[in-house]
Figure 1 (cartoon, rainbow, N blue to C red):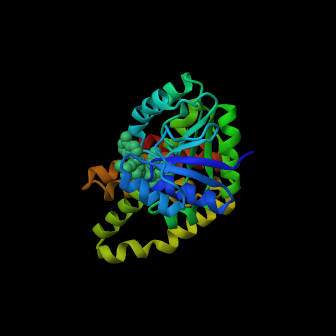
Figure 2: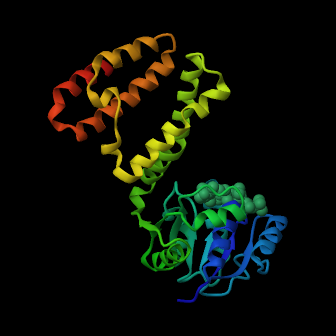
Figure 3: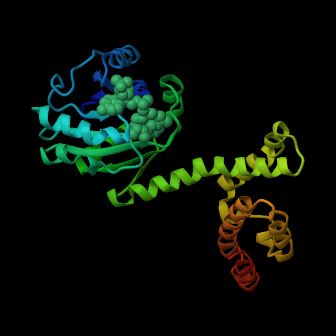
Length: 286
Ligand SMILES: NC(=O)c1ccc[n+]([C@@H]2O[C@H](COP(=O)([O-])OP(=O)(O)OC[C@H]3O[C@@H](n4cnc5c(N)ncnc54)[C@H](OP(=O)(O)O)[C@@H]3O)[C@@H](O)[C@H]2O)c1
């Protein structure tokens, strides 16, 4: 396989992934963007020429789209109407939230569309490219596109999961739950601790070892074996006390209730023989 590609959309993700690919032996034929300034900045990062895309794209070169989700329909339209060598070209975007079929017009014109989503936060090109070496990539799309983007993912980190177009949104909800909702949960726990009288600047570090130890356990033993605490023990009195202590803060009480129900569902997997205890807990929490 010819390891050459071009980039359109010289933002954080596009440049990070392109830099990581360069380090892994791929060549960037050129890059373009909406504005000349960001295309020139991208070209400097990647040591490649600025290209007018799609007019100056060489035939047969895969095109990576590093543009935001909301710009994909417009970019799809622009490329489909101006790329004269679109037939058979692999064109893929980097979004985790939308499937490759968002590139409808390119697909109709004969492009092989796909998506390559790095499961990583890419705040800037340099730290992004470094972080990508340990990232998992989710790939989805036409078989011809999959062959290229899977090779890219394997070259960067060796870690790749395949998705169907229908499961893309569900996959994104899972990633949001793992990353964004975890942040919201820690913020909630910090707020509860502050209400318990712990100063805000002490509240977050107070739970650091507990949280890090829990995450470590989940990744060594799995979530089912890692669940501890009153729900897992079926301690209905303790959960009732928690709900009662949270009465003054109805929103926090509601969030606690929803998460405790999730913990009950998990506890059932751990101790199927204790279903009566968990039924009682579920009744209290529902
Ligand atoms: N950053 C991350 O952590 C991360 C991680 C994984 C996946 N992603 C995905 O990567 C994609 C890009 O995200 P990003 O964080 O790299 O965004 P970004 O930093 O805002 O960069 C987007 C780039 O797209 C360019 N662009 C070209 N045509 C555009 C148009 N019509 N409208 C708007 N922008 C246009 C912009 O160019 P100009 O500068 O010339 O305006 C900008 O450089 C998104 O789908 C995102 O979900 C991002």
